[in-house]
Image (tube, rainbow, N blue to C red):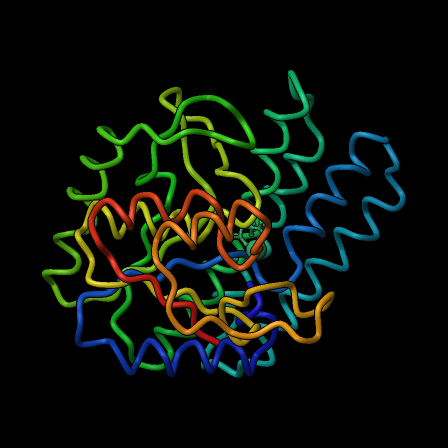
Length: 274
Ligand code: ASP
Ligand code: MG
């Protein structure tokens, strides 16, 4: 999310992908910048039935995304803009139906952020000549129905990831997918908890037996304290899995707490890249 917050960030991301494009790679993306927070705000306004502000914030979010496509200066942007507008229409419809409970509704609204960023990133990578295949995470990560904080069904997820991702990697294409979002056995959208994209990457890495996971952040790396609160905080060059779990548990927000476990089990290296 932090890396994708503007056109320069997306260009930077594409250059990173290009650097590694000849190795089998899955790119997991989050929503652009603070989009997830903006969607949470839309959902709040929906609950409050504050239609005026809802409409205003919705238009704002849509404008931001369209302006980002324009700033990227890809050839024939109309197709991507059209696709985004379609997604935004779906979001608007989703903000106009009744949900049986708050958690369920949340998981129908918030995943749109990754939908939008997926469209934009796919279009940009393709425009750069990078062979990329977008695979909807709803086809990959299967969970229970604990909306907003779903648990992975590993058996089903392994089957779907292997069936859908391995052939694409064998075809020497870069796989692009959304983090954080998943689906339950009923085919209804679920999410893995805020900042869950890292966990999605860990799930994919575990099942595909990846060599390493790199999470790209806008902070220098893993620190021994929150640098905003403790100016004397220092970067930790190497950390054991157990220390990382402990750090995540005590609030090192750079790592999602569930991320380390699957990596530890298979000895997969986790790099926090700036
Ligand atoms: N976009 C989601 C969030 O902001 C997931 C993530 O960023 O990892 O929580
Ligand atoms: Mg995010």
